[in-house]
Image (cartoon, rainbow, N blue to C red; front, side, top):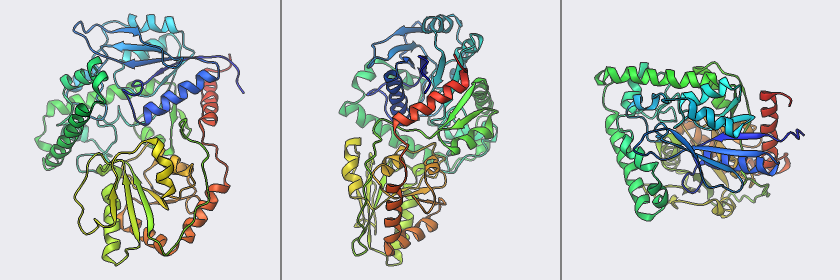
Length: 465
């Protein structure tokens, strides 16, 4: 074990409860684990805007031993909202001095970046000048794709942005800067989780979804050509930052393949974990006389593959295959169900504390994503309870699965998924075997094990001290 005490600076979106999601969960749990190992841990996050527009970095309240700093007047932070005006996202810092002074104060041995949102290119230039190594974890595709997930307006994987034309169409309904300004404010941070603000957020998402669906009928030769040039420049801007980074922590082979299609970079694949992952594996009982209990966890958005799963199940009903029931958790809204309404239950949002009960009542979890999902924590969570998983070929979590042994990897196609589910309805022995194999294998997926792998990566990057 490497016993050298390090000074580690993380750049991430922020802290809970203001920030949530897999990126936040992972980065915070990693920082806390590094603290336990005796390292000095610092966090820089993109904060609020003020009228001066002067870029400053100021100390914030300590978080469980982590020294926290706020970047005031960052570049815009679009989250999942897209980019409306690319020029605003490429503005140069008026001076590098703020970053230079900050890095001289913190004196990090290594900088671990979890997102490019909000941070200026000059930050990376100063780190390079000071010979501070930078590593980057690939939580999403921001920088390559302004909408983060590389899914275009036709809900297809985007492999060609057509010199920015597709970006213009995809981002037509992106967040405005005043909205981003408000969402970064301290007032919003205070009221983010209030009932009213939650309802307003859900309403905004629904309106954006509906507008995006209407927008998909537009042809690309109608877009603003000047704006296409700006999106070209935006991708070039971010790719130059990515290529300046010393080492990449790919959280899956999926992200490694995607990133290497766009930028010339070096790194390694290390599957991620979080502190909630414990070894809860148990042998499950399967009864072919009872309906197959299928579970889907996540939003109902197209890119998450819910409609693909739904089509698969409807095709089973048309064939008279009715010995199943789908439980859906995580939907923020309901959708009208037709012939399948007696076979699908929408439970709404869930919390991590609910997972024990959810997985206890699950025969098989389906992760049918049609986007190149960078990892997929829900797969690891299910595995930790011994639950067999059907995972699409696009999901990074598939790296942990041995196809046909500890899970089943399928092509993201409704017919193929329907055929697999039909087989499982008739032969529960397949699931019994997978469950048994999961329970018998090693389980090296806890945060304790993961942090040691990250330590080894750091050592490789900065060398012996």
